[in-house]
Image (tube, rainbow, N blue to C red):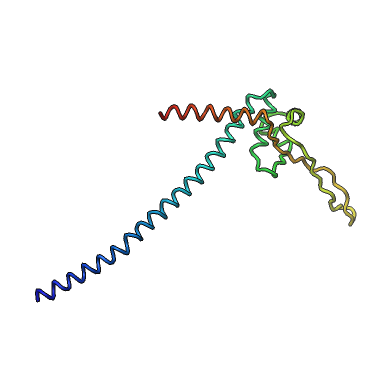
Length: 173
């Protein structure tokens, strides 16, 4: 009986050893996969962090440019819109700045003259007329704004980022 128990225990130890032999590589693979997933998440966070730092640096840089207060604030409003979807009305910008629409037009003209934005008129070619069955031209409906990358703004934003990095790097050490 003792011999049968010993052979069963040897067999069960052999089974456990074979399971461990299989499970250790699986555990190792699972750890590697987990590390890869974590690295991918960190890379995504790093990319998002870098993008948000760049936006912050550009916003800091615009505040140091030779523009009126209203032009700087109008630029910040336009810059917050997604690329190719920037067509706020003068009224919207005026409401955000607590200024008149004519002041907003001055700010936008200043930004355009100094090369910080490009303005493209948007048109609705035709609209249905209530009095007739024919479509009539409607004309300009709004403007599309494109933020232009000014070399001086980019250079200043890079300098702000370098200063920020040096400051934070020195604090860690």
